[in-house]
Image 1 (spheres, one colour):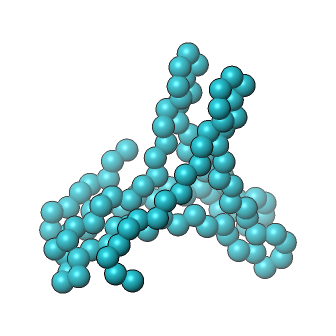
Image 2: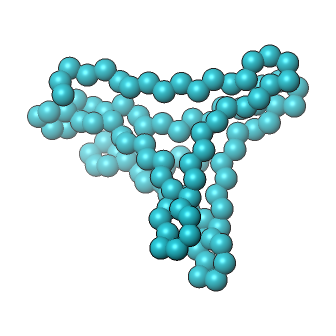
Length: 105
């Protein structure tokens, strides 16, 4: 699925949202890569693209990624889990976090 691009205005907007419920648990949303039964499974990338440098006098900023659980007025709020897979023969997956370099601040 691709949302349109723009040359004189903002690019397209895509929102995936599962259903709301006033009586029971709201809908779930799952995004999965394809299984590879004979080889590797597919990749799943969530990323923002690079920003341009001519939009403002100070340049643009690349997009922000937000991973956030919801709030609640009664009970426990949601959990955020980041993990890698296990392996029965070989190594388990890695988790890497990096911070970009900058010239000020």
